[in-house]
Image (cartoon, rainbow, N blue to C red; front, side, top):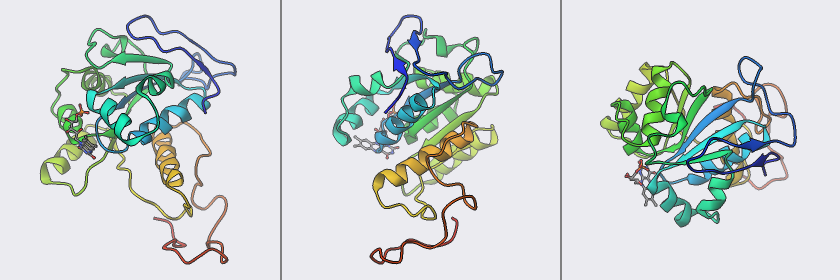
Length: 235
Ligand SMILES: Cc1cc2nc3c(=O)[nH]c(=O)nc-3n(C[C@H](O)[C@H](O)[C@H](O)COP(=O)(O)O)c2cc1C
């Protein structure tokens, strides 16, 4: 659960307060500020857990949901759309191209699209800024800020792969939500936490959501546990 006090506002100036010192921005003078897009791929829980992590870490979050993200939140999770909006410091409608995050003059420390549908991936790779998520991603790239996409589709066709390569060549981090086993996951939430941690790593936001290989607990799974596919190697 987030420890900060958040206020969701749609079209107004951002407002928020924290009950603990927020983590510093790159220059140390303000809280870190991350734009978050959740799109209509399966797995909106990834974006929800990411927002919760940002809140717990005192990072300022600016959220946009696509129409299909709102549908998948209802279809796949126990969260209501207003609850998800409330996890962010500020929420903007995807149709509001006049929102602050639509401009490079709004100083964000990066943007994450989690999960990222193949539709949004294609739109970002081809520079379509017709919705706030794709416009904010375009701004992130043109300002040479960190863009992290978490594309969710399987199997992948050549169009998907080309679009990922295009974004990677432009400096974006492409972080598919792939399963890992070296942290000995036991629940679905363990897998999700691992992905969220890897995305935070890309943004340089320190967290202890998962182990860093070679630093803490290892190597073999609990011998009393039932046999599983858990391997003792880093992936
Ligand atoms: C339940 C559900 C799951 C979906 N899962 C995926 C998916 O994993 N990846 C994907 O690219 N599209 C998926 N889609 C299709 C997208 O929602 C659709 O392409 C939509 O146009 C994406 O729009 P957006 O990028 O604006 O959110 C899914 C749709 C539904 C209803």
